[in-house]
Amino acid sequence: MTTNANDFEEPFLTDEQKIQNDQNFDSIDSSQTYSKISSPFDGLKISSTEVLEKLTERSHCPKCDKPVKFFCYWCYIVVGCDIKDLPRVKLPIKIDVIKHHKEKDGKSTVAHAKIIAPDDVEIISYSQMTKIENPDRLLLLFPGPNSKTLQDIPRSSFDKLIIVDGTWRQALNMAKTNPELKNIRKVTIKPQKTLFWRYQNKDEYHLATIEALYYFLREYNEVYEVPEETINSDGSGYDGRYDNLLWYFKYFYEFIQATYRRQKGKKHFTTRQREGYIKYE
Image (tube, rainbow, N blue to C red; front, side, top):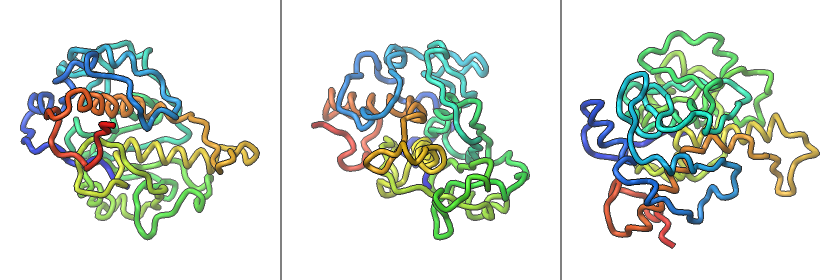
């Protein structure tokens, strides 16, 4: 299981610098650069992101007063549009995200999950994590030789999923060394290629946190929720019910792709990209 990788080399010393450098979607008018292109999300049941395409300026978070665009990374509050215009997803299981306290807020995708599924997702700072109750009833989403797939785990044996969020090194440290986490049963998912735009020194099967949660829920659906008689000819029975978890992720991915395609050769967000990530053709 992977989480977010560091991308930009500039130091992030203050909240103001984070806003200026890390949330660099603000630097380009999304209403002018966004264009409809062939997308890996085309087959998913994701609501229209038109409301995001219309946002051209930052707004102040009503709670912390920081100027942000789309949503506040610190308070998980939507800004610039009516929250009623956003999709909502009901999850079949409660999710606790243990977010490393040194992870850069603007680089984390867990805010997407908290905003889209607010009733079922809690984000806890690693530095403020307390004793975990009923650890035998939990699963920790993390790969490893002792990790099992959902097919091998009875649904009646767990009540909640824990995800660690941070750089790969931070996530590994939390999962392997924290006495509260290291003994929790590990669950893993099938290998999936990431579409995350942040550069990372890992292979393309290291996912952003929101991707990992999404694929976990897809497998959850197919293992526990889909009646056998409804399974499709390709062996899957997933009906798209969790696709909107990728609502923000889809928008950002397509926005970045469209920006580079329209202004090929220019530096926009970073010069460090995985080879072939930007689809010019």
